[in-house]
Each structure stands twice: as C-alpha cells, then as structure tokens.
Length: 275
Ligand SMILES: [Cu+2]
Image (tube, rainbow, N blue to C red; front, side, top):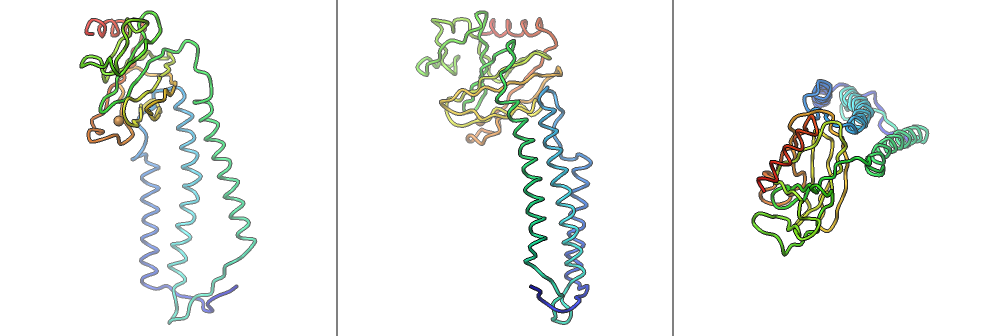
C-alpha cells in the first residue's frame, strides 16, 4: 500500500536530525572500537570464552546498529515533506518482512546457542578434581571466606554460634575445629582451579570477580558453586554486584593470586595465628 505521492525534499529539521544521528553513530563506534569503555584485564582461564561471546555479540549487533541508524539518518534528511505534500513511501511488503524476520531469527538463534555453550561449559561441567574449595558467605556488608583447614572438610554452621569474632557461626566441635575464617580477603594459587561455594546469611548479594569473569548471586538458603582458574598473579578486586542495602558500595574485598603453594600456605598459616 503506497502512501504519499511526492518526491520529498531536504528540510532543515530533517537535516539537523540526520546530522545528529550520524554524529551519534560516529561517537558510539569510536568509543567501543578504541575500548574506552571496556572490561578490566582478563586473569582467568574460562574468561576468554566469555569475552569472545561479548565481542561476537557486539560486532553483530554493532553492524545492525550502524546500518539501521545511518539508513534512518539518510531517510529523514532526504525525504522531508515538500510544501505539505508527503514523500511517497510503502509498507506491508511481505517479502521484505520475511527477509528481515528470518534473518533476525537465524542471527539471534546462533548468538543464543553460542552463549548457551559457554554457559554450559562454566556451570554444567564438573569442576577439576584437584580444585581448591573455598566457601564465601555474603552478609551485610562484608565477604567472609572460609578455608576447610587440614582435614579438607568444612564444619557445620549454626546462627546461634555467631559471635563478634565468628560472623557465620562455625561449629568448632567437629570438622569445623580447624576451619579458617578470613573477612574481606581471599587467596588462590596461579593456574590452580578454585571452586567457590557461595552462600548468604541475609539478603541477596552477588559475588563478583571482574578480572576472573565470575559473577554469581549469593542467595540465602542456597549454596551455589562456581569454579575458575586464575592465570595471573596479583591482587584483584572483589565486589558485591547486587544492591544489598545502605552500605552495598563498601562491600568489597581483595583476591590475591599467589605464585606458589608455599606462598599460599604461609598466608593461610598467618590467618590461623591471627584467629
Ligand atoms: Cu552485598
């Protein structure tokens, strides 16, 4: 069905909008292609595949974004009304709609399965048997890390046992006798897999290690496991990525990746003395 009958013309409002759209596209492409807003440096093994999914999605959607916005800029500039007469246009073209819908459906399906594949590898693959298990408990407003001690087994926790020095209430009578608690500090070893067991004692928090590409909700009543393997030594920020109350902004910590088992053991021993 055709509407309008004229050839249209360049109008001042149309040209202004067209130029604004053009500048908008240029600035967007410049900011992303020069990586002005980009991820922090990658420091884990599985993170590379996460980053790849982001980049592929960004390129595909970026091409669609640039093409449609530039087309829009051209059309609003070129086809303004001429003395009240509207430029000719058409809609309800079955062939064009079939191509657009089919193309979009195929593209999105491929992108979704690409993401699902990476998700599956991270969440539905058994963690390596030699993973170092660390428990992390989110609570307003701190991260409490627990290492199982020499026996490798975590003791039970009981809210009735919470004290000033024990924010999660470890039962010290059984396997928990040698458990080590550290607030706000976690250590791991370079190239050694870590399995984090994430819990919460109050509201929903989110255990976020930006450099490791780990981001997982901490949900009261659940223990959620997430694994990662740090590839570089150094200190990395730990954040809470779920608005969890007034002091949410201050709920941070530090992950230190040690180069050797000996360095790690020394740190753990120091915590024990402190405890
Ligand atoms: Cu929080």
